[in-house]
Length: 153
Image (cartoon, rainbow, N blue to C red):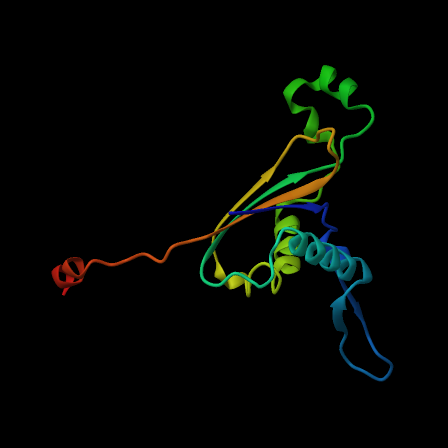
C-alpha cells in the first residue's frame, strides 16, 4: 500500500481554465497554473515516496480530506459540539476526488479508469493543517475456478 500526504487540492472550478482565442468559435479548456503547480507537487511527493513508475493493474483508492482548522475552532466546538466542523470551509468530496485523481494519473497510476474501489472521507480539521491523505492499493485479479465456469455453462 502506498500512502501519500498531499497538499490541499484546489477546487475543480479553479483547476480548469477556459478562454476563447481570437477568431475562434469555441472556448479552449486547459489546466490552470494552480493545477499545474498541484500536479508538480504531487509528482515530487510521489517521487520522494519511491514511486518511479505508475502502478499497473486495478487499484483501490482511499482519500481523506482534512480542511484548514480555523483559529476559532475551540469556540465553534464548545458551541456546536461534535458538529462544529460542518461550519468549516471545505471543498466537496467530489471536487477533491476529481482534482486529486487527475493529479495522480500518470504518476502513481497509469489511468484513473484503473480505480475499481474508491472511498472518500471528509475529516475533522486538526493541528497538522489542510491536506489530503491518499492510500493506494493494488488489487489482485480475481481467479475464477474452472469448476464454477463449467457449472454455469
